[in-house]
Image 1 (cartoon, protein in one colour):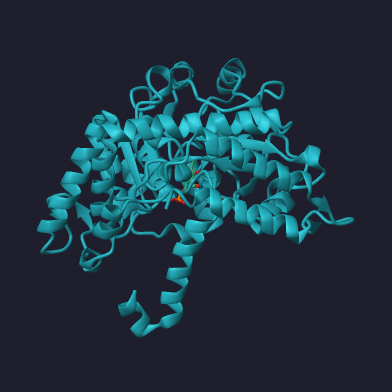
Image 2 (cartoon, rainbow, N blue to C red):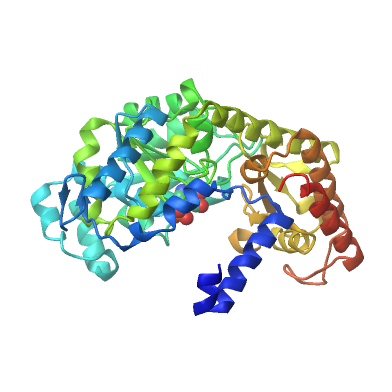
Length: 452
Ligand code: PLP
């Protein structure tokens, strides 16, 4: 840090402050974690200086022998960890991984001579007319993904996202009575809509997904089945989601981030059946620029760490903690979407407290509890203010917290939410006794003290 400080002290201060904040607040953001020192060190070094566009052994730059070694080892660990026939570890993020997958699926279905016309174009430069031309060339292919309010991600066909521009899109939601996916309804929608791609996976759905059932539906309508396991990759790697609930054997193509429950560096990866591998390999330069060799090194470390037996115990503990947190909230009368959880996250409906997700998020943050607001199914407050709070246990489980601490956290969350009142006519402003938030904040820090 002193080297950084000698150039720009304000950056050194912000880095140091981030460490303090991460240590002292309850990090309950479902998509965050604490990467190990080995992951951080593999990422923070001179590998960052190297260009290596292309694939292993076939680069557009000279001198890539060490990057070839690193990428090969990352692929080797990734394939072994997930039992996948093919792995591509270059995507810089989850969104990039999804774009690589979408282009691979489309390119697999589309006349190659036509695609060549667009090969040298940047996605952002395409005009609306060109998008229409492309969609037409792709046979106006259709995508069916989970809706944003049911827990899907922007990249699963949300209209303002590029996934909603590339495809003619429709979404599936959850059964309002159970808060869970209704597979019979999904089958009906798929039969009627006839999508080219069905996307499974989520950012805010608290239940297991039956990927075997989804694959059957995809086969019935001739769709490619893609799963985005960004959130729960750690639970697949750790053997919590097996059989019908493990996407790897059931999907044609699976994407992930590496930094959430998997506890690696920020980044993405794609796994696929061999028949899609040559299209996936074209991710760079089709969608991606030069890979990040330092991040691929850190991915290799994270995959290797996740292959150790202790990672399975960690993954099991994430879910036990999430269930303990859900129980603690339920017994205090908090309403949960779907009534509980099977995974690493819990989705609170804060509507009964008379506040919005936005008010709840800030009240909790002021009290040392870091969460994020999230839409709930058919949310009356929309995607900005929302009526939900998403909490997740991967990060606190990394620090060693267990069921007893989860119950105390449920108590703190309930105390804050039940003492927060909305300001007249506002969906953002609220009142909360500062003495109460200070007290909760101190309790949160004390609770974390034995888990540095
Ligand atoms: N896919 C899912 C399901 C996600 O939840 C997220 C991020 O929240 C992403 C993809 C995007 O990941 P990234 O932020 O690395 O692009």
